[in-house]
Length: 102
Image 1: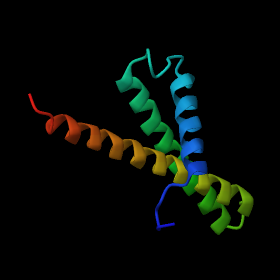
Image 2: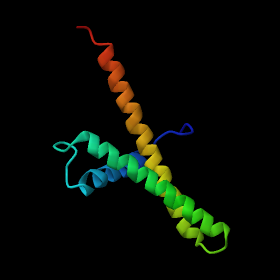
Image 3: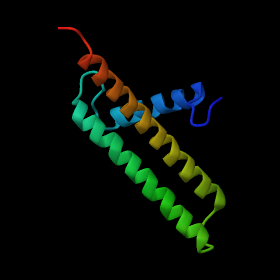
Image 4: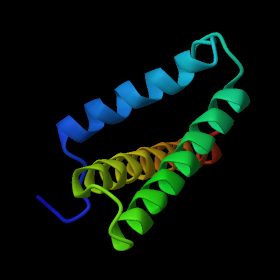
């Protein structure tokens, strides 16, 4: 498999993560405000990245647990991969629309 390729397991995890983000605000992606869902998803990515950074700093100072660091970094990486995959699909949809004949 190519470097950076998304596996079916990672895609399923990303889908579940997006469902949790959409459900956390009380709105479902199909009926809720897309902008709010997108904002919540991006905020979640930023929060998980900050948590991973905090865990890493604690480990560097000798106060953190290595398992917590690895878990936090893995969650942040999965969130970032999900965000990139969604961005790529949005760009592709935009390009498809722009190439449609009127």
